[in-house]
Length: 557
Image (cartoon, rainbow, N blue to C red):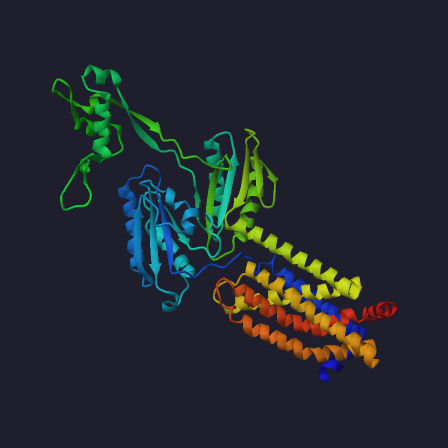
């Protein structure tokens, strides 16, 4: 057999054996080097191709419902002109109907006039030639630039491919002596994130200072005017908020029809100036006990104040979230760039301390205030997932190693089997590079890719075990030399091994184009293909010096 002769020549020639080691080491180094060079990028899960997405509209606090509606109408008018968009639903001053992701994104808590959510349904996947996340990316700038009125913050939210999170990148800011100092520091973090090219929809989830007017009842004037305090409160509430004052009972209706009373558009102030509010209140009058009409403006005092910001906390600790989404990129790479910029630019005013993982602590050199920056969101899920899968992979290698030690009673050959299994990462990495070249989108090394890599360990170990056992059998029963036995065993076992490989390749090809499980399919294809090459050439070279020891131990036992 040609393959048997080729393998035998490699085993007999020391230079050729060393070349096998060198080529394998070179390919391994090249494959590992793809991560720091970003030739292959890691991400927990690729973006999901969905039939819908959402648009979140946030104006500054104090904005009117009319302004929110104006911005939302601008967005919806642009969207309905797109061929892919089927319909648009706008929800003013409230969140859209809740789903799992909306619960995490706190849509249920939205009740301000400055907030709106827009649900957008697009054509089904088979009716369009573009994926939903590419469509969202293509219209983001148009929406944000065309409808950026009243300092509106417009965010495009896609359905997550994995567990729902608040955002792709969440920077939790803790510490500071006050909410104001914590918010000011969060704004600095926001400025750094906005500089990253692949980060979009950056926002600080903290209210800015908003001027408001408080209406204070003048109790002395009210009493002297023979008007009750309760009467003044009711008139103010009835005029501007409205309430049910009665109900109508009809014989042909099953339930009562409520009567809701409120002023018409006259209740709307022309401006947010104090004089305009006083003028509007002067048009409302109450009747005292003597029958005289008294303007409300005479019974109240209007005072300008700053609206208290909404405070947020986590684990009973005050904090502020700075959120950002990624645009066709993994979360880790723009975050690392932003983190490096923080380490380099913040050291003038802050003492920067590296804490757990990628988290940072900042100590203000002037005030002594301490701030903590803890990364969360999909980034945190990604890091945790890769750590857990990495740990599972190491445990699998260790267990297989000790299993082989028990079976062969040799640490060296057991290490060789484990090493040959680990080398299949070469095929996994290069398969991802090829898929990234032939596909239009970035093909990431995902969590499912690592699952496929872990699954390959058993397949590769089985291939090595078959060759080693058959080699022992040929030496003991046929009296062949070690190199002849290894070459013949490898060539003989090549057919069942390649059949196993082809079966795995054909089965995994069905997964290769899937949005979520594509990494699993590609990892299995690339890993099994390279495992065949490793089994044919690397395993024979690495075991030839250990077979004799195994045979000696077997005889002595």
